[in-house]
Length: 580
Image (tube, rainbow, N blue to C red; front, side):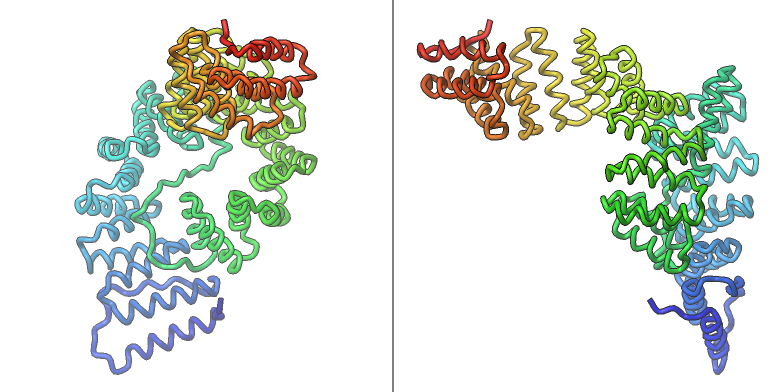
């Protein structure tokens, strides 16, 4: 990319400004053009701002030109100058929502009264945009106009019931009115919608302290310290139509693209930021994140290491570097960086979660469980840790504690089908079959393609003797994941061997068993099931051959071999095998 030196750009702007006044009869714009000090700006910023200035000088009656200049200024944190540009755009195009909305967004910190007036104008143009009501409500709170702010947050919540920002606003207002139970309801709803919402955890800590629950107050206070102090409010109306210029603008654009999972474009923006500012740690860190999400781990390592080279005490990049190294199987190096991250931020639950996963992969179950338990102690609402810890505990047959964590995971993420399936499996193993059925059914409703939900449901139904319902559940499991052999094999066995003749279907059983044999040619159970299916279908000689192959494969399993031998004796008599 061609770069102009700062001096050259300023000279060009000055010459064009002078030339624009020679021989021109047009009056100057009514509003003087704001001009920040560009002497220390990056060359790309100077070039972009200069071009925007020239366009405003050329077309002073164009709201779009003023808007572009405002966008350039705002992206580089020249907020007062940006607000004046948006105000002029609004005067030129008074019915356009974006201009007063951007005035409000830009004046929020420096002039809340002016921001509130701007949001009021924006609301009169389009009253149905939820993010505007969130910003308007926050501005009114800064002006101590709590009753008006309450109406804004309520309207935002009606327009978007899944918006955690509206819930936080309502919770903060209730907290200020000392309505602590009301506040807790809104704030807990906010962290349910976004568990990483730092401001919500901070307000919850204050709420629980007022309610006398010091332990939970401290837990949420610790979480608030770990999380970003400001949570971004998605605002489509604030997006600019101009290409980013300068490292700040490129990082902002990259982060917005990262949120939308548009990784290729985000990577381009972060690289552009580094061209402008090679030691920008935010650009390096987020470029590493984007590359990791694409599976380009070796490239990601370079950028995380660069952050640590520039700033060794950056706990976030120590954690990210450890996570990537763990994915690459470089566990010893990963552990060093994860431990350094924990040293820098001892209360970082994510670092302990990652370390727990690493230790489990190395087969160190007890230390892994210790780290995971500490992670949920530090962050009781960390659903992913509850799910992972509960699953490990279930595998270790520590079912009561597993149940506790899996129940928490479902409470925190009610629509997480994986959590409900694991909870259902644990309930089943504890003999609580009806509760397990309810979890599997809910999991299937949340994810109609979740094969494990149907398989678990079928297992429960079968244990209750509801074989006809179990058959249908197994069929749904097979349909959801035709490559998964477990439900196919179980279904084939029932269709071939069930004592109820009305439930048997030899042809379907053969088809299913043959599919499993093609996938698992060394599985004695697959050939045993195929033999039973062939016998049910009247193909006794084929059944004998399949049973003989099953015997060969089961040679090291005396119990299974004995069972297959008994069934083979039936096939040799031209009979099918039916279970008790």
